[in-house]
Image (tube, rainbow, N blue to C red; front, side):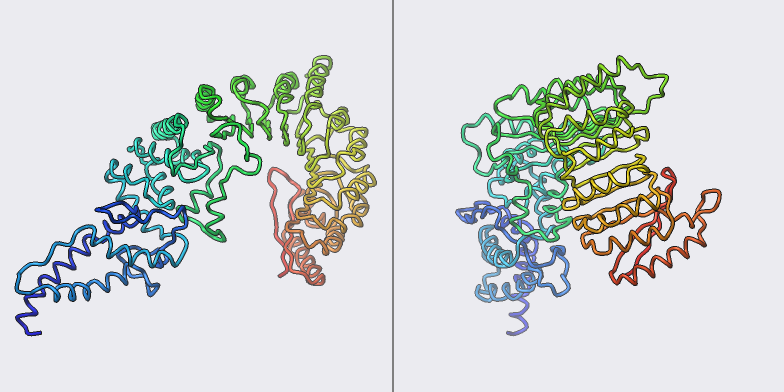
Length: 593
């Protein structure tokens, strides 16, 4: 080609390249949305089977370091394509034919889709670009929802919700939500303490649900069955927003937030899950808003509160909310309050109606002997026991700092209807000989997976403890015997049976007083427990000064001796030595690898 001809075509080629480069992002968005344009773009989304481009998540305009970005390959082809296109056109005409949006889309779509088929998820940079483009025109974004790939919904929803400026788009996204579950509460916490954003977002989602429930036939794309207002669902957003996708296939991503086997036949077309947590944040108004909203739509949706937790709040706050929920849905109760026994008796009236309750954690307060009123206390305790008898699914029971428990633990244990999986008694130093005798003989403690005794004096119960451990050895996974007044003789009694707890994963026996030789015996008898992952032993007596502080020089010698024992046992292993002071406890690691 001569110089004059080259000059004639140089301008058209450059103009065509500029047009194509400039329209690249728009064409990518067209491909992503599969929108219709003059009869083109009819390739509908494949129900979540879309795949990602092969650029390893690099930016659309940057080179991917040899990873084969479809942007890089496509842009590399454009100059040659333009040259051929221009040569086919008569250079003497002085202009190029118009390239319609449909033509550009067809050209780019074929190249793009060929690369998308090579992997599972589209790169997050491209999805973010597409989501940001859509946010520029709310009306167009709403119109395109029917054709958006599933992968784009989490990006769009997260951006719109946190922005708080596009309630109509958020409503439309919720109406077309292509997942079984919408984990909303995680997004409600970011940004923190931004009530206007939360209120706008929540109203938009509620409005969308009203529209969906009012329709006899649901929108084609909407698969929403669960609105999750619990503090769960972070994994959903992390994986779909590509924060983390380790060891997750596409099938796992799509099914991770399914309702689960217990909801194959839900009570209503839509399930709303809510955790009831009462603390200093005072979320009572939020809870009541959700409860009243659900009550007004009873029959169309079902509000399910599986967890109740209280942290230092008056019972009156809890009572108001409990009066509005279905107590039969509650499966887990955690009471961290300084309620007296009369208040606990009033709470027990609600407790007995929790027919599906599986886990209870009760933490009260120690009461001085002069403050106790025996007659009133016994009446409240009797009410508590009568309600405990109604709990036919209870599997986990944790009791901490309960002033009424000494002398009555046997009565509590007799209320158990089925064998427990988890039993913990903590900070109850005044338990009687009769209490502990019944504890070790209770038939419903023979299938325990977790046994944790903390601050319980076991000095005179070596043989009963050995018998209980022998019974639970096939199932026990966690054993805690912390601050139980155990000396060398008590440890000697349980050593043989301890070596047979082959399912044991976590063993802690700290804040007891015995020498380094006893720690060595424990290490040798637990060496064959292949499931053991965490071991916490007390700093041996030799490691302390007279004043009770740790002597670091002696401790270094003790650690060196324990490393020698671990090396002799021949298995890589890490243990921890904890000091005996609970409030200022220090932990030292000893490892052999």
